[in-house]
Length: 198
Image (tube, rainbow, N blue to C red):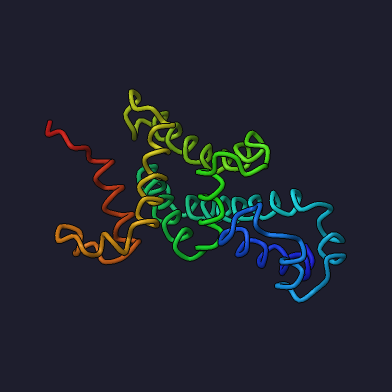
């Protein structure tokens, strides 16, 4: 992708995250990127195409990061823990992309094909599901645990923290969890160890 197209993507991500798809015009994006409307359309044929490219770019960047992080560990448990921590790090270091994706997930109707958005977001979800299934196959994880639910819980805990961390900082029981990474570590350890005593 050219430098100009990447700049448009970055600017569009911030605007879409702040205002939503409908409230952002191509003129807004062009002005913020320091170019013209024609330049935006040179790189992206429609506003829909630009919006989908922004979401796809955010998801692919995160997917590549997860793959690289996961390959650094031989043990399935450490690999999945690393994915959870990497996911949290990505959320916190890319707030515009995170807010954009969350806006789309929680939007009842953004005007964009929901099935298309779901197919883009599903790629990273499926990456985690595959890692859990691999751990089950290797005998590291219990076979009676639903791999998709593990992915939901890991992602949901981190997303919940992203949205509420300024409130959590005020809770006495959570003051020791003083960073996003520490939260991801403790959340994963709690999930992996379970609640019930044997």
